[in-house]
Every structure is written in structure tokens, then in C-alpha cells.
Length: 232
Image (cartoon, rainbow, N blue to C red):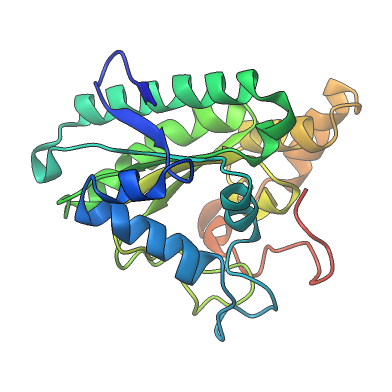
């Protein structure tokens, strides 16, 4: 159990004692069932074999999924959301540092029960993504009806979740399509997956592979890995 110093939100290792976690709220139980029944399972519209999210299945198997619940619903302010994300980042860094053998499998979820202003989730994601990416992590936005397309089928929406949340996880080699819109994101990506390349070369590659304008949202068509190339 870890409690943020700014927000007072507490994050738990949900698989260490899943019954205790589920007792916290209806949304806590929804999160666990969504991970087990949806993300960790195949889906006919996914566009490839295997589970919807292989990463979270491995995180859950190793008991490396932490989650917290931030109260406030639609009364949450932008400043309050920033405090929550600040704490989430601090705790995420600490957990990975303290567990080097599992550092690349940690997932930290912050759910927002009773929040229906999903534009607030999107806004926080836009404002804080760069910080996470610069540290070799990804910040994901999930909520009911989220229309971000899937990598293998643009009609499949993997970020459509039963409860709004923000999720931190390590950056993976398959994250390229989510990082093409900014030079600094691409530079961080190449730094993470190819750290031995000279800095100037990483910057040059990032410049050449930048996708400007609305084309950067075409996640499915920007996928560069094949069905037999797994995330690392």
C-alpha cells in the first residue's frame, strides 16, 4: 500500500489480496473483472490471436498490478488531477526502482469512480503524456466509449473500459504509433529501445520519422510490427 503525499490517494497491489481490493468499491471489482475477462482474453474483433493486452496478463500473473481509486467524480479540478498524476508517477518510479527484476512489468492504474467528464481524462492525458514518455513510460487514457482505434483493427477500441482510468506502464517496442506526433516522444522511444545509438543519430531518426498533422492519429496504419513480432 502506498499513499500519495499530495493527493492522499492510496494505491494497492491488487493481486496480493484481490478480495480486499474488490471490497473497496463497485468500480474496484469492475476493474479486476475487466482485466481478467477482457484484457487477458482473446477477442474476435482484435485482429490478431492472443489476449487483448498480453502485457497486463503478464503483470497480473506476477502480481505487479497496483491500483488506486481517486474520489471526487465530476467535481475533480484540473489541479487535483495534476496532484493525483504527480503522486502516481512518484509511486510508479519507486515501485520499479525497488523491484528491478520486475521493473519492466509494473502497471499502475488510477480509477476515477463517478467521473463522467471524460474530456478531463483526455486533457490530463494530453498534458502529462510527455513527462511519462520522457521517463520511458506510457500514460494511457481509458474510459467508457473511448474511440482510440486498435493497432490491428481500427474498428476495435481497446481503450473503451467500464470505468475511467489513467494507466502507467513501461514503454514497449510496439508503442511507435502512439509516439509519432512529437520529436521528443520519438527521441525518447529510440532512446528506450536503442540506447546504444549515438544521441545525434537518435535525434536524426526522430526528425525523419515524425508524422505531422492528422496522419499521426492513424494508429492502425502506422503499426510497424508484424503478427509474429512481440512487444519488448
